[in-house]
Image 1 (tube, helix red, strand yellow):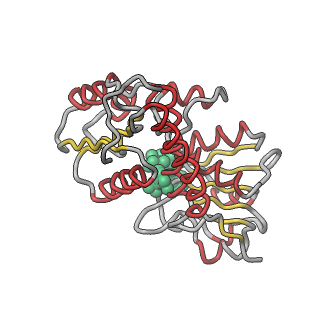
Image 2: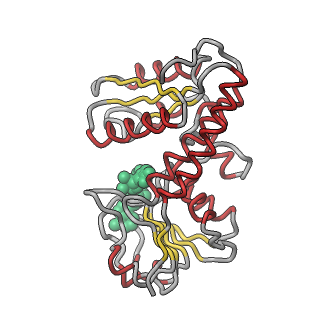
Length: 289
Ligand code: NAP
């Protein structure tokens, strides 16, 4: 068996077409552009690339991105103040704090400075709770993107055994919660899990969210399983692709799987936030982005 590719580029393009139409409608109605503020701390090249990609996508769907770049040595208190300013600014619809932030910063405090109504990346406690209670708040962008990708291929989840490897608050943990909300039976694995291979061998759906290239061996994949690889380190995913693709029924490529879905989810949630704010601000003209 050779797996069907879960093509995140193609699915995200469809989502972004929809977002672009929604943005055009929004602009016609409110005479202003939706605005996503991106906050980048420090000079990590990968983070710069991610923020640039997000800003480019904003432009392509007709949104405005406001880039805030801060020195690596900034204190938590100053970062929190800057994010609070954006939270209070009626001209800003969504806020993304690119993570990871430098180690000396209290990342959780910085995330919590994002107003829940602008938390389009789904990183605050409020978003986590609304997600857990299935109350329709903003989803953590990568897990939200994973679910949208699975849905685009009509992959059934109810009653399936999903094994999520990784339990970070922005990726693994919410991915498991969203799968649970769709009636999957969820097992979480993490750095203290024993016999990882045995867990993966029992999975109908594998979600890898670690950041360790080829940690998940192809031979562990149950024939016919669905494999979603969110990991990205040293230009590769967490799953040994060449062997996994021969056993899985569906698999995400890296790159071109989960990554584009994350950005699409972020922008879809930004237009949702903008609609919610409505014409709260008339200060953004429709010139440039
Ligand atoms: P993270 O905060 O470092 O979390 C990594 C998780 O992996 C932790 O829960 C950790 O367990 C677990 N882990 C570490 N070593 C393990 C091992 N040997 N066996 C099993 N589990 C292990 O990272 P993250 O922010 O969740 O990101 C994870 C990966 O996804 C990274 O490669 C990141 O670049 C990628 N990512 C991709 C996107 C995208 O859009 N494609 C978005 C976000 C992140 P403990 O909890 O026990 O420490």
